[in-house]
Image (cartoon, rainbow, N blue to C red; front, side, top):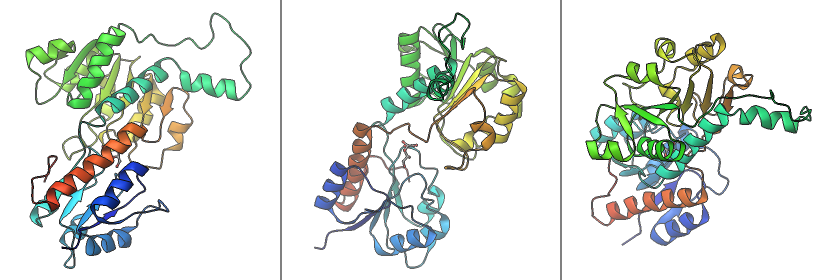
Amino acid sequence: MARPKVIITRKLPEAAELRARELFDVELNAADTQLDVAGLARAMREADGLIPCVADKITAELLAASGRRVKIVSNYGVGYNNIDVDAAKANGVVVTNTPDVLTEDTADLALTLMLATARRAGEGEREVRSGKWTGWRPTHMLATRVNGKTLGLIGIGRIGRAVARRAHHGFGMRVLYHDPFPLSDAEAASIGAERRESIEAVLAESDFVSLHCPATPETKHLMNAARFAQMRNGAILINTARGDVVNEGDLIDALRSGAIAGAGLDVFEKEPVVPDALKGMENVVLLPHLGSATMETRVAMGMRALDNLEAFFGGRAPRDRVA
Ligand code: 8YV
């Protein structure tokens, strides 16, 4: 029997591409260029399985197209807001994601942003590189302490819990969270996390607020002008989740007015576009969506996406099915 045809939209680390070649009749993207809508439409017509990435919008139009051959979309990423899951279900297309394997590295990056923003690391780096550093002095670039402060988590899934563990056990932080699905008492105690009934209650008490919810219609612009007004004046926002969760215009206003003190951002509303207003602010640390960007995790994400395809084409249930 012919091997299933699989198209992978972007270049993956070598180990994952090698395994993809072993398993499938695979089309790789050696040039590593972003596919446009026509390119995605062709992929949907010519492949049995697709591995897309965060920037590939798998729309209702693509999923409902009459010539579609793709039967499974194996997303390279845990977040799958790039895929119209309802349309996939309606059209009988299976969707999977890559949970677990990126939890620890994404949590590390959230802590990186928290520390970098609070301790003015971006600003300090820019000063050194520009040759403007004039030497040590007691009042130079004084920052905000992280240790012992209160961290509020919006969302306490796998990544939120990994952040809580680091913050509580590593930095002696008090950790608050809000999530529609509360932790068990034992789990909450093990990572030192206290639940609050509302997002507002978390915002009111937190020195740092870190977002760990998925991007859904319900969480779109969850952080808006009203919510920034509820944060403490000296507070810092961290976003390693999705740009859509934050109203970027309102964030810029909140930073400008001093409603909040800073932000550490790995994700943006219109990636790769980052508003010039944010680029011009010293109290903001900006990263190019690097949450899962370690070699270890990016290989593991590839293997997990391939595992899901292998199970599906082998007639078994893919372990990470989300639709
Ligand atoms: C990926 C991510 O870089 O997994 C996610 O949800 O945001 C990142 O880890 C991205 O999704 C790659 O497609």
